[in-house]
Length: 341
Image 1 (spheres, helix red, strand yellow):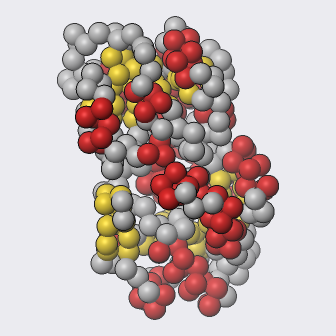
Image 2: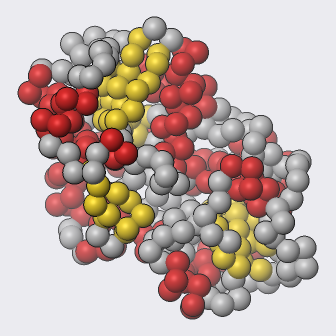
Image 3: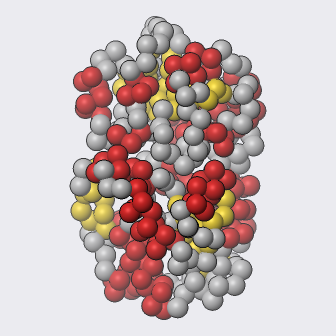
């Protein structure tokens, strides 16, 4: 059994695609002969991220992190995020002469620009420094790979995301949180309630029926106060989240900055057609027009997508298995000397 050490700044109790992807990948790696150990912010004292208190930032030095890393032997090292732990682990690895892989989950420069107006080019320069030290950088889609290649980030490998098609499925119990007397169709958004998610673009739409929002984040209070007719159900996960998906009629993904959108695949697996912009992520997932509609006019996408057959949405999602995407992840791993694991 090989031993993989993953250092990540994103971990439970955070609820997001990065955490779910890492957790599911670790489970899928075990039958492939790789046991995963995580180092997370839970191993250190933390401070809340400014402007986003739900995300803890680990107070770790290279020395303290090195002690955690070497507490147990490992064969391969993966740095999942570019936060304080990721940077400290990168420093430890370079000092020790260890080879490692990284992953790039989000459009961090675009997110940062939305919050601070720091030029995107400056942030990509930082990402180049972080990731170009790696033997390989795993990215979510071919579209993201092409974009990162243009920004000078080298050795990128596509690592898709999967979905639990047993949990997220069209048949099964409906959610008690979704009232049966709400006017239909029910338009669903699932994800962080943050400025970079462009949620107002969805909630501002003049659509028939009822808008349903699942998630939490720094924009929660503002959005709920502004959009009083929408139904805010808070953060949900597991069986309750699956029940909410199957209780609704169309999934709306308004983000312009996501690199994949794991929730899009969960919605498809639940039999929900998808309405989204034609950007990186949705255009890599919604490759069958019978399963969703991508349009620069989000209202048009919604009104057309809700007409689609739920069976076609489900069928497309079956292409996204955790086993298949984890095989891609495993193929990119190297040992500490840089040899294929």
